[in-house]
Amino acid sequence: MRNTTLCYIEKDDCYLMLLRNKKEVDENKGKWIGIGGKFEEGESPEECLLRETKEETGLTLLDYRFRGIVTFLSDEWGCEYMHLFTADRFEGEVTACSEGELKWIPKSKILDLNLWEGDRPFLKLLFEDSPFFTMKLSYKGDTLTDIQTKIYR
Image (cartoon, rainbow, N blue to C red; front, side, top):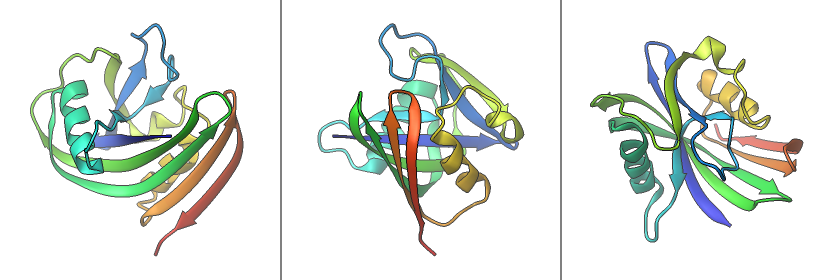
């Protein structure tokens, strides 16, 4: 079991997306994802979010929203609890990322990218400005086999 963060940073109706294409061994290889990564020992979700954002993009987040928790169950990678955020205030300039290519993608084009199948349902909730939610995504290999969602009003 691991804890991770994922953040969709917004500017001009675009999200900053990361095409994971630089690491040889990467479960996300070839996929477009948001910004984030694994918790370090003793980190809170917010501390991990801020550190990973700075490391991967060079940006310092000034404001962000905790949007949900997504549980991934996989027959290949085990269990992951992903703490999902959005952010629309930041400072700094985007720098090169050692894990892949960063690009501002219009929100209207995000679902056309090569995404994990399970990312689409939580991205739709972000687009709809849904209240806080939990989601459980079960995978066999790369195939999404089950989705369970609870929205908290």
